[in-house]
Each structure stands twice: as C-alpha cells, then as structure tokens.
Length: 180
Image (cartoon, rainbow, N blue to C red; front, side):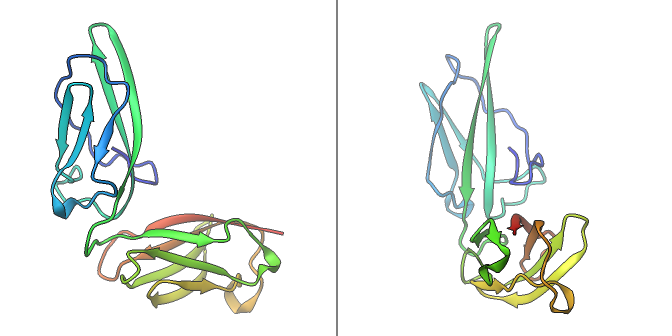
C-alpha cells in the first residue's frame, strides 16, 4: 500500500486465493478505519484489512494506492486500486484546489479540504522548497490570492500546497499549477 505521494506505507500478506485475482471489490467506500476492517473481495477470496500502516498506527485521511500481487503456479498478476480513507476525527486531510491549473489573472484559488471542520495550517511552497505564502490556520475553505512574499504576483509554475493538522508532524501535500 502506498500513500498519495508514492511512499510505501505497508506491505503484508493477504492470504491465498484459489485462482489468480484479476479484480477486487472493497467496502465500505470511503473507508473509515475507526468503524472496522476494509473488506477486500475477489472470486472466492476475501481479506479484512485492519486499517493500520506499517508502524501499527491508524491510517490518516487520504487516498491510498493498494497493489495486490496474485501468484498461481508460475503465473502472476497485479491489481491496483485506490481507496479513500476519511475517518471521523481523522488526523489528516484531503486537499482540493480550484481552479487547478489556474491562470495568473484569475484572482484567487479556493483551497478546501475534508473533513471540512478540521482546522489546518496552510502553506504554499515553490518546487525548490521556498516558502511562497503562509496562509495561517483556518477552517475550510481558504483562498490564496496568487501572491508571494511582499505582495508580488507568483510566477508561473508548479507549487506545493501543504496542510498540516495542528499538533501533527506530517503535512498533506497537493500539487498546484499556475499558468499565464
């Protein structure tokens, strides 16, 4: 399982199936780890995922890529699917920026997140890691006026919008494009 930035979150065995698994269904959608396991199913095979990452912590809110490798005899196949985790009282957020990409003359960009009632610290960085704008701590939605330090217009390019739940170490990151 990988997080939205492509980092490996957990590897584990999901048991054995009677045949190659070429498609998987799962429920519930979206998944809340606090309400029980995520049940994965394929023809004659089921697996209850416990909602934990590799360190044993409950998954943060976000989108995860599950890669299920199936091997039968000498043949093998893999199935990839995305699972959205949105837990009550979650410690992470799912970011949305609109419009994305934005045109320089569009005025501002609306930044929202789920769960909407969760306050987050918002910052905008360029790809070199330089802080472009600190939007402070707020509830969803927030707006960025496409200005950098000192009120100068932000340059064309790709930016990283980060949202960190106060008290948490790791922010969620989202790519944003500004075009002329």
